Length: 505
Image 1 (cartoon, rainbow, N blue to C red):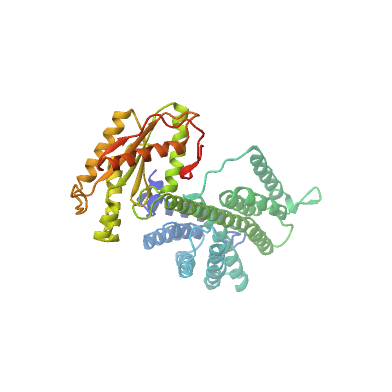
Image 2 (spheres, rainbow, N blue to C red):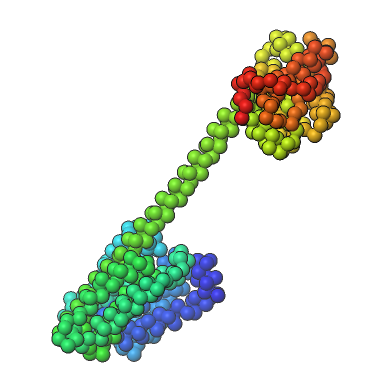
């Protein structure tokens, strides 16, 4: 739990600092257990990957402490195999190799997640190629100074390949196992069968004495297709784990004398094993990284498509709102009013509920416009629209600009008294704005309303409904303005016309 908390924070806690040297020490001992030459040359050197993975995972935080801890564990683990001076020098070479790799990756901005091909290539060049090669040259010099009889370049090559393979295989494995960005695998029966078959094949190949079973060649190269299949199907975690197990098993088989690469001299056997492990790692881990990058690009493309779709939806909503909104007053325009009236008419006809329509006109608006100017007239229309919106707020009701200084209101009516009361409140509210109008008998700006109420039936049509409300408005004008008049309830039962541009359904 505490380790997981440290990983989430990206800061190595005290428990990580305690376990890191223990894990590093164990990896040194495991590597020496698989040594196959008198100089303790190994096929794959594991410990350097432990420190490099820690530096990459925590992005260099507390790097001096992590380096000191692993340096101490390296020296302690090397002492039984080398003298203390030699152990110090070789441990120093290992530290410089890891720090060089980390510095080069930071210099060329390689992501520590190693999920992109370009990041993996930068890691490969920085660590397994350059840093491990320099460490091999330095370590071979140390070994010869302390009595090794093996040729210098043979020692350098063995060290270089062993350290390079250790970084190449176990650094991605440790990063994958400690990362938070990998999804949990859900294995099917087919997946289980593939993994079981790959492991059985690996066991058969690596246990073959002299690289053959009953005279049939079963060299480890048979495992290369299995690594590719695992990379394609399971991704980085299982691929790096498979490659790590095969490489470690190869070294152990060589230690026991099984000679999976045939009866060859020990140094040549080490080189063949390293060549095989390098090919296995490049096929398995390389394919896994490539697939991971393709999947990442696919997810990024899907994310961009979703974002673009949302942007288009928002744009469509804005365009729809613009098409439905009057540019001057900000309320519904005539087009939206026509659509809503048709929809509310159909709904009221289905439910049998009454529908109210109010037509509203600003009194003496032409005289106001001529006296104060068009800008003042536009401002008045905006104020009237705002007041109507404040007064008509029920769900399903609509305030729209019908044309010029005329407005329309669609409402769910209860009865005639309620409709008249609503109209009266609107007249009072507009007059209450106290907008001075010198050409009005009331001295302020007022409005007149005509209200029609109907329960729609098949014998009625929208055009007659509009005409009835408009007739009531005309009557309110004739009777002195600043008032509301109710339309005659006997709406025409004749054949419906299409006046006003609104059809039947």
